[in-house]
Image (cartoon, rainbow, N blue to C red):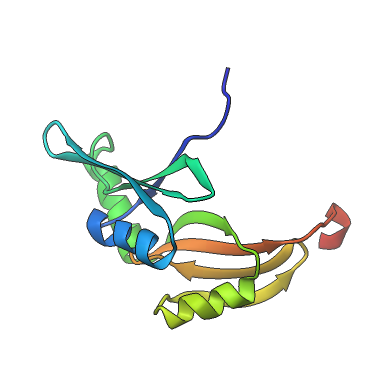
Length: 142
């Protein structure tokens, strides 16, 4: 029986730089950094309030085919990859804090039926959505 989500993958082009971004800029904790057979490197980070969920920072490569890995690299280089949704207490304040740290935003904080949302990019080009949630119903979207 499945009991929870324990691991999600975010593709990146440089595991060191991306780990540093998630740790130094976003406040995640480094959790794993090991090299396994044939130079495969397993790098994970987790958020301090959810240590049971690890984010794998993976460069496109095996087990992906060469074609698929090349596609992921092109998507990352173009800034067209989705990443994570991150819950925040105060979207506008978090936006200000991250802009001060040099983070690139695609969308400033905006009111949505489900809360306040802003969209940023990590250092590799993945979109990260910041959401300050609020109660909503399907009728709020009409």
